[in-house]
Image 1 (tube, each protein chain N blue to C red):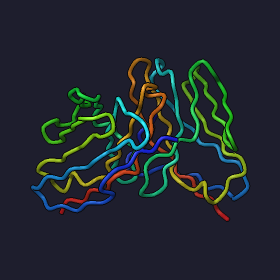
Image 2: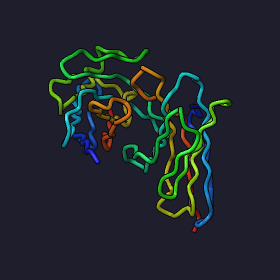
Image 3: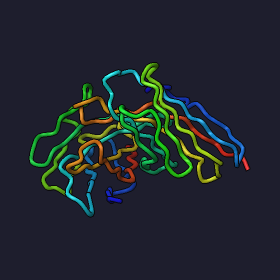
Length: 116
Length: 112
């Protein structure tokens, strides 16, 4: 099956700093990438959808100026958490899909962000 | 799917028994459903999917049942093994939405 990687797998940052998380599709071209956030013992919540070369579409309640998403190529999307606060500590998961769209969505291993 | 907040419902099952995990969805326009398995600290792993024009689909040791009348989805795992211990999520796609909405999740604990 298709492989999606995330980097870093874990990151600790200080409050007020920014942190970037990368999502890569390793063996296919991802026309769409999705970013999810998951708090402990909760489900995955979609934050935004990004299409290569276009601006991301954010879900209601997600601040686009705080969670910057860039999808500059068909294999890479980045999520930057700006001015991070402890409440941003979470498990961030990306997924990628090719031409099959939602019917062909592959998840990354997740990135654990801890803001101190 | 249903949101269960900070407490995931837990299903304890004896090794070798069958497991049934249930999911209620809310949108009658949903046309595609997926079951995922998530182990601690990892991303979701695809188990099985079903489209709304079907009511049953079988995989290896797993069966998904879809009841559109009551908007209910279930995952059956046959001969549950210790490696099946994880959190299981259902997800739905609303037709033309091209994005998945996840249910609240169920933790499965397999007792040896």
